[in-house]
Image (cartoon, rainbow, N blue to C red; front, side):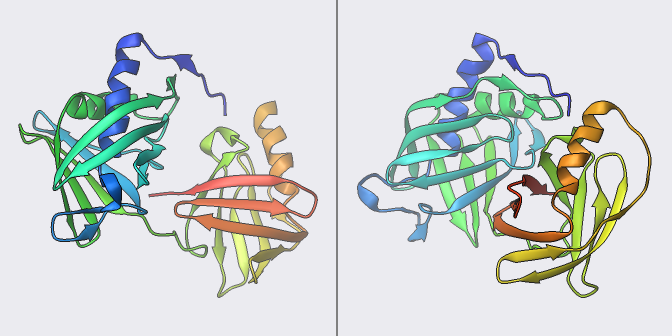
Length: 257
């Protein structure tokens, strides 16, 4: 994918810093690890669902998440990654110094990150955990909603390839009942037999269309084709799938919402 990266303005970067800290706001100082009625918040990967600020709700980008553990918050807002010290006093969250990357990513809602930063910057937040959902609320009523992340199922999920880029067009879906994998290599459609066993996927020779696209897509397509006609190790980490073939080819993909 022809993804352009640029340095964010100092203002935007400054806003992102408190954003990251606020999102990671549930770590209990001294290891209490809970907010409210003993609900655990540490050691949990929280998916950011949305932010509501000034009466407007924005959905979070795929991949936005926060983990709080041992006095530290870290994660991703979909484009930028972050880390921060984080402590909790009862149900009130206090944040330490934070660091974040300063990139603007194509096809990622930077407006969301800016809104989230503006909502959380310099705030003391009330944290509420209920039935696997975490809500962070400012004194003026703006909210950030998160939910406990669970691993996406390997089969039946549309996995959009992020590495190689393939301009966001490449995706694969496994059907374990039919014993197949199908999708797009970025330019051409693909279909093959697939057997899943003991952390590995055995892929058969690919049947595919024969279209020609721009060179960058065709190069990425060649990389993806190296996964086929052999055994591939797989690992699902929440919403991310990593495939590593016997020939060393590594492909990463995210579950499509």
